[in-house]
Amino acid sequence: MTTFLKFLNLALVIASGVGSFALAADTNFGPTLASPKSVEARPDAEGFIQRWILLEPIGVNGLTDSAVQKEVKMEYFANQFSIVPQDGETVSIGGANHIWHAVDTTEYNVNLYHFARSLGKPTSNVLFWGVTVVNCPEEMPGVRLAIGSNAASVWWVNGREAVGIYGDRQTVIDDGVSKRITLKKGPNIIRCAVVNGGGAADFCARFLDADDKPIRAFTVSAGNADK
Image (cartoon, rainbow, N blue to C red; front, side):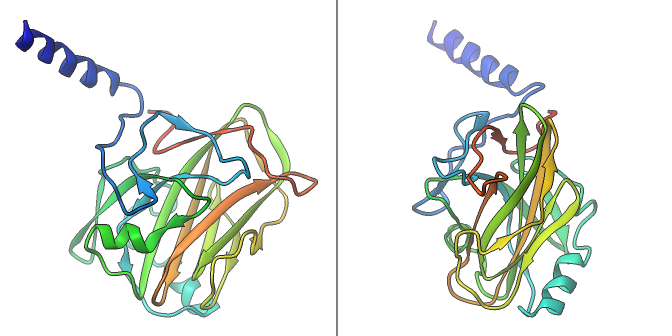
């Protein structure tokens, strides 16, 4: 009976991953980051998005506007600006494999320094890619993406560049704010590239309404919402 129950449990786990998001293995990426434990999450009380898929860091150099724009627009892997990765997927960059990892943060910000350190990866002169899926119950016109990062970062919403901040800077809430945009009903793809020169590295992001109040009426998925 024990063997049968183990087999049944395994079958249920496999079946649960078919046609839907498969939960990541239980992994800690530092004191504030861990693998997601649910299919969807909601933003925190202040509207900050706490679920992302992060790519292991890529070596780069430079924090000026021109250097960062060149670094983030260089093609490191296929479908760089359209891919919605799944946890555990791998891309090859310069002959080395880089893995995507789904993470939840317990804080308003995502600590990239701890993320990289936990994986034994470099934390200085690196580029981090992050992707998340914001699922809206209805169209949301006139919203703004508000971000902060350490250090420079560039952000895209549904494939269009929305906001960028540059230079060697600390993460400040709402440090960069996009022009007003429309989030469509259903899944919206948020993508960021964070460039760190040295020391701490992190970012935060949320959406603000027409009155600059944080929006919380959506859910967040790690990976492709259509799978």
